[in-house]
Length: 170
Image (tube, rainbow, N blue to C red; front, side, top):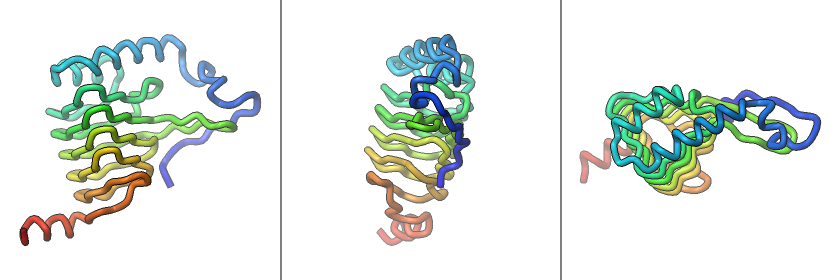
């Protein structure tokens, strides 16, 4: 189970109550910053924008590829460790709005993690240090350190120990 905080709603579906949960102006500001960062080719500029304006925790030399989309409503709940690579067009969500509830959860991406292109990371997950996430993966649960995962739904392909064994026997 993902680590999210649940908030139940009684009126209409939770998305209709969006601006009761987060400020309209915060979303507008975050949207503008995210759009600027998506298209800039300069990693230092992206990381500065994310740290300064979105309050994301971004480690030294983390690299966000072109078109990455961090959560527009709760980016401050995202942590990316040093020397990690977030692949092209990846979406990192810290929220999910459902019919009768909405959920918010931190996303923690460890150090030296490789996230493949077109991946979606759901709220409340931790991706351990040194993990590899294959392209087009739906990360819906925690990823152990050093593991190789992939698919939709995500499945463990190799553990850290299996990965190390393969590297030394090939």
